[in-house]
Length: 602
Image 1: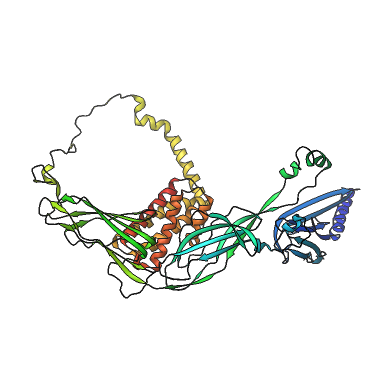
Image 2: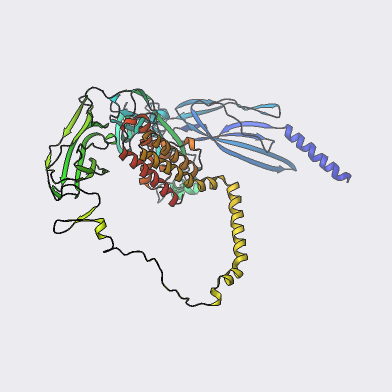
């Protein structure tokens, strides 16, 4: 018993002595690096097996990222020693000579400090060029950056402003380039077109350029801060390669293969997230003038053309006539809304079908003449504001002659016209070609009546199993709802969305556009929050761009999400431009988004 006590006492004293003998050292795996490569900073604590990660000071010329700890234990001549090393990756940002300052940590009331470490950062081009001429110095900011170019810095509300975002790269490995991100406070940003790649010389340097193009427009007047424009990508940096062996040099280095194939194959690269941004820019937005605004102006801004096609031009009373109205040209087609038809009481007008095309917008509208005395389709006008001339313009087609044959007045109960010119009504055909529902099923008789088909027999054998299964399902479901918040939110998401959709339908029918878009936005926001287990308040149009990058969702649905969020923003800032057709389109998009996400597995 005494021997065990002395052994334990010896171990405690040994551990105390070891704990008191702690060393601290900072080192780098190489004293010289170049832009586009990395070095590793190691903070090693000897005589201790565990210590928290030190907080580093700012290190000039480098971006520092924590890699993780590593521990080591050794036994020499019966003496046990341990150490822990915290490793950091150093990514050079500019060329020059730098010093990693002394780092001090406090452990159990005692301060431990390391010595400063010198490190040189060279330009990669200069280092590999081999020439004696001095090379121009570059920072990382000079070798990878973006520039945002607005087509104009003064515009009207809803006027299209061309935007180009250019990514400039000078001899760096850039991967996983994402589409630019732009704050959307009072601004609508269109979809970016396919990026264009080319070379451009700037300040004596040949850059590889990737250009993203789109259009933006403002929803409100005044001075608007545009930006900052951001772009995320990955910088591919090369970590230090292993040293070549003599076998590699003799056989693979200067031999048949003409190069060190193992070094090339096992070269170690690491991705470093690079967040680039272009500075903010102020744009001045003017309200559309009040003077000269036509009564049928619905918010269209641009330089448009307007064409109307009518077919057929010879019909009977009650037959449909299709009006195809095409708006084309150059402008903001998102503000081209329902075209007013001033046709009087002679026609019954149905809601149009709106289609966006590559060259403009198509409105297909069905009208039905009510009288045979109608001999022409009245003129149809389309008004818009042309920012090039600063005026409202109206394009009106000429009245079109049509022929309407048949009765005098269209009756709502009319079904069709008979061959002799007479009118047949719904009440005249009931009972002639409609099969009535049978009121009596007739006489029934039993067929194949066996014992095992009796309900009591089946219940007797399966009642206990059924009750046990139901109890197990209820217990597991209740437990999961109580412990798995993600599952509970996903389960209740469609129920809450259904309630919101019903409320939106009621507001749409009532014509309350502002309340409708508020409910539509809240419904979509809460549904996406529950579906993806995120805070609903943080779900905005920027969330659509994030899930689009992840993939797994149909691009058409992504576009509808983006359009619905934009429509809600437009309704908030430009309520006068909202019409019934727009609300119907947004309502259909909301239902389709919810229906798709309920069917697809994410």
